[in-house]
Length: 313
Image 1: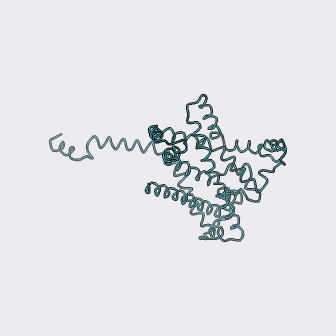
Image 2: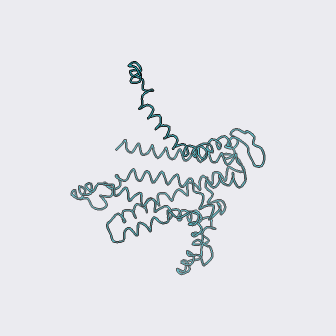
Image 3: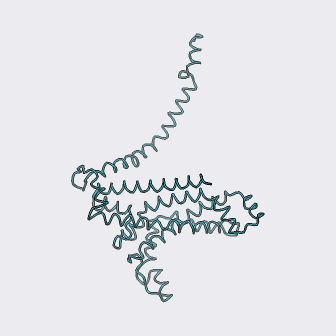
């Protein structure tokens, strides 16, 4: 190799050894990422695009699809048949989300109680977390027995001992949704407790020492130290709670099937009914798109609220 070729290699990065090594490493990285990328495209990206396209079609299986524009959306909003159920499912969805603040308050209280060096505290932490790792389908079956309307259901057995009349629980339109909320709070509390515990243990002890020097009591330390320091943790739990509530399906399908009188039919379950029970793929896709927009709007609203809070602080 003459001097001119050597100089060309030094000045041209595409012919140097580091460029070839960078290309090989980049190729290897994308090769390892390819399975995950394919899974994302096949099971996430393509179904989303397919749902958006199908939402503009009148597609009732086994009949062929035909383009109808925004007719599915107008039927959901103003249609004489589908509109009442759709708006009821929207209201039920927000009703179900009332369990989020209840869950967060209880989880924070328990996390503060467990954030101490006490004998056997690890056992209590494990006990609170166990429901979270249990299958929702299995949990729903167990709670169906607890809510059984007969006198041998556990809750009714307790009511009989207290001299209270037997309740119908999941079969009572006034009690069905509160029963689902109670079970959801119990099932999801363990996860929130762990997240709050991590946030509590990340708070510097010096802040509490300074607060004690200033004469702050337990309540003052919580208001001025613990709560502000837990803002990112609380925001994360709130976002995850909203997402999980909007996507709630298994407990409703197993325990109530949307009843009685559609009082537990949320948007996610209404989507399932339209697409997979009545085989109205176009209408079900429209509900899916609306659910996605609602989820996106609520998430952006929460992020906007966090940004405003940080800005003003």
